[in-house]
Every structure is written in structure tokens, then in C-alpha cells.
Amino acid sequence: MTSRLDLARLSLNQITIDQCSLSEAIEACGRAGLTVIGPWRHKVAEVGVEEAARQIREAGLRVSSLCRGGFFPAADAAARRAADADNRRAVEEAAILGTDVLVLVCGPPIGRDLEGARAQILAGIERLVPHAEQHAVRLAIEPLHPMMISERSAIVTLGEATDLAERFDAPRVGVVIDAYHVWWDPRLYEEIARAGRRILGYHVADWLVPTTDRLQGRGMMGAGAIDLKRIRAAVEEAGYDGPIEVEVINREAWDRPGDDVVAEACEAFLASA
Amino acid sequence: MTSRLDLARLSLNQITIDQCSLSEAIEACGRAGLTVIGPWRHKVAEVGVEEAARQIREAGLRVSSLCRGGFFPAADAAARRAADADNRRAVEEAAILGTDVLVLVCGPPIGRDLEGARAQILAGIERLVPHAEQHAVRLAIEPLHPMMISERSAIVTLGEATDLAERFDAPRVGVVIDAYHVWWDPRLYEEIARAGRRILGYHVADWLVPTTDRLQGRGMMGAGAIDLKRIRAAVEEAGYDGPIEVEVINREAWDRPGDDVVAEACEAFLASA
Image (cartoon, rainbow over all chains, first blue to last red; front, side):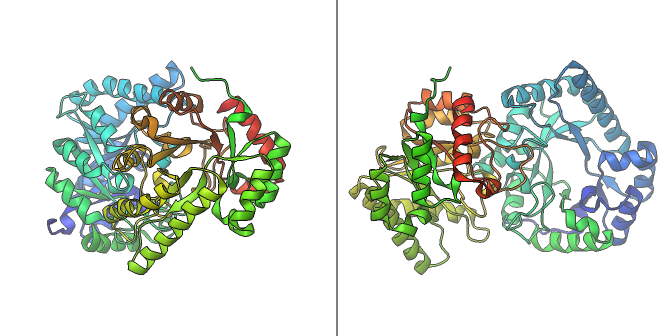
């Protein structure tokens, strides 16, 4: 049903080892035999984007995506201008880092205005697309689990993310599917098929039972309730054959040596993703 | 946009004051001027269903619904038979308590088999419907927030609940809409309209920011991020004009005097529901 995985498909999403600096993460990738990384902007900022790009390139790594732009809903015009400027910088950083995928975490509603937040998100993406096109960077809307709506994203289903993406030319705006965020959805498989060539990335982690931390309580693949092999099969059937990012945001893992977490991620990826 | 609320519409869902016995909850309703209650089975069981029905009747209260039947997914045939028997008893208890609405919390998946769980839920409702019909009790499927999927319910969207309900004759199976469970859904308003006359109950609580307890961290109406007035308007526009249950499952509220929580619920209901 699914293709056989090898470590060449694995991209280490950097937040999985947030305890490490970018250079430490790069070295951990090298020791584990990984060739793809998904950096986060707060780590890139610590060394500067040009230096980050140099370190990644010299280590022989590729960048699957940059995390993240977004956070479009703004309380006033000044906040909106600041978000726009930051998103333009995110596009530029993606290009410098050598990836054509910028992940968009779209941001929570302001107060109770959920519909307004969704309208602001569409408008924000519209303003960003020309800049992204100019830098040959594609915008990848990531729907987040509905339990994160008030901290992270008013976009909470794959269907909604695809609806948004379809407002734009296909090469410019797509979606990222993270199994952790979408596995509960009764419409999941039809929505994966519909997303099709709009799928610009696929992320994996597992849903622990119980989930003791709503934002930073993800499990390694195989440790939880998600039928990851079935979801990957659907994502591949829809046409996606790119890197698979391991994005296990787990507060407890951040207290352990990065190399141990990476080794565990590789093993879980091969066995259960 | 919305009708004016008065306390005659308020049903006190008993879990809001889980620190109280049924008789204490009945007395608290009386002191607060409430006339409708939504009992839970574990409280009813403490005194026995006949005695519970007598106490409620003699206090002049009506019962909006009984919470809850469901938990259909079972690991084996013996567990399935036990769940079926318990659900038949729940139907009988609803009838004895004088309500024609039994809320179904459908139960979590076993292991990773989410599709199998959903199939078991449909099959379980099919087995229960004749017994419910015989007792003139309607089954009300309650979709729960996707963050509760592994503890409470594989049914996580209103659309999915309505799809299930539509497998049956309209008078027999419907849905309960709880604003707390569904407010995040980008398809919410179209699904409320589609549910229409299948809506057998409406519950309110608010989404606190941050939400510090995934299962027992709900807020009083007005304390959080949900546009409750808009959702109520949609529910009423769809044709529902019955009781509105205040179901604020909050662990901290259980440490306070029941009367204080009920007074706060009444105030929040009139101001913000």
C-alpha cells in the first residue's frame, strides 16, 4: 500500500530538537545520516540567514521548507504592516536558505471574530503572493489541530486550507499536511485526494493517549493513535513524493540529548511513518 | 439577530456542579429559579432512577436530556454486548426520568482503527434504535471537540453527526450541538442549517484562552473566544427553540459551592449565551 521508506525521505524539522542550535542540529543530521532539514526562523535568526544558509550548504544538507510565515490576523493597521513586513522577510529567508516552500501558520483570531480572522488570512496571503512569486517561493498553508485555534491558527482543516490555496494559481500557493493536525478529520481522505498537487509538504508525529500537553505533547511515530501508514499512502497516492518532515513537538524531548532524539526519530520513521 | 433569553430556557447540565448530588442540584435549581435540568447517569445511579425521577418531578423540574449513552466501539463481542445492554438501560432511564432525549457520546476508537470505530458507532446506533423507539426516546448524537477523540468520541464534527443521524428516520435520531465542541469548524453555519429539525439540544460553555485542561477546562459563557450569540442565532434559525443546557465542565468550579456556580451560570447565560 505504501512505498518503502528510507532515511533519504526524512527531513528533520528543527523544532523536534529545539534544545539544539542550528549548527548543532546540522551536526546531528550528519551523524544520523540525514540529508534534509526543516529549519525554524528563530534558530536561523540566532546566526543570521546568510550564515545559516552557508552552514547548511557546506554540510551537504537540503532544506525541505522554512517554518514559518503567517500570523495574519492583526488588531490594527500597524500590526498588519508589521506582519506583512515579517512575512516578506520570511519569503526572502526561504529563498536564501535554498528552499522554495515557506510554511504558513496562519495565526489565531483576534477576540471572537473567527470569520474576520479567516478573511484577514486570505487578504494577507493575497498581499504576500507577489513577493513570494518574485523570489520563486511557494506558500504552503498548514491547517493546525482545532485545539490550537486560539494560539496558532484559525485555519483548522485541510479542506479549508485547500479552499484558500485554490484562490491562487497552483504553482504559487499550496498546503502542508501534518498528520498530527488532521488525522481526526472524517473528511481526511477525500480532502487529501482533492489537495493533490497542491500538497507541498508532509509532516509526521503521533497522537499520544493521553495527550498531556495541548501544544507541546506530540509523540514519536508509532507511539500513539494515528494510522500514519494509511495517511502516508493517501498523500503519496495524491501525488506527493517529497521529503517527510519529522516534527515531534514534545517538551520532554527537549530535556534530552539531541542525538538521542534524532536516533529515536529515525527508528520511528522507518518503522512506523 | 437572536431572541431575548430568559432563565426559562436554561437547563442546568448537572456536570456543571459535579460536586453536588442530584438532590443538591435539584435544590440549587430551585433556589436559582431554574425549571429544567440535564442529569447525568452517574448521579442518577446514586439514588436510583425511580427515586431520581420522583425527586425531579416533585421539585417541579423538567428534564431536557439524559447524559449519556454511547461508547459503542468495543474490542470484542463481550464488550459490545455489555455496551448494548448499558445503552438499553440508558434509554429506559431517560423514559423514566421523563425526557425523550438521550445524548450519545459515541466513544473513542480502539487502537488506530478510526474508520472501524465509526462503523461500530453506526452499527451500535442501529441496534439501539428499535429499543429507543419502543420507549419514545430520541437518540441525540453529540459531536465532541477533536481534541477529545481518544478519550470520548470518534465523532468530532457536526457534519459527521448529521450524516449519521440521516441514516435513520428523522423523529428517531438527531444531534446535539454543543458550542464548545463545534465553534472552530469552518463549515459550522452550513452544517447547523443542514441539521435543521434534527437538532435535539443545544449546549453552551466558552473556550478559555489559554485552555489549561483539555477535558475539564471550559469557561462560563462570555469568558472566552466563542461567538455564542451568533451560534445561538443560527441554531434558532435552523428551527431549534428548546432548552439550552449550560454544560461548563470545569475542574476548578467543582471546588466551589454549587449555588455560587449556578448563580454565575445564570448571569453568564443571560448576558452572553
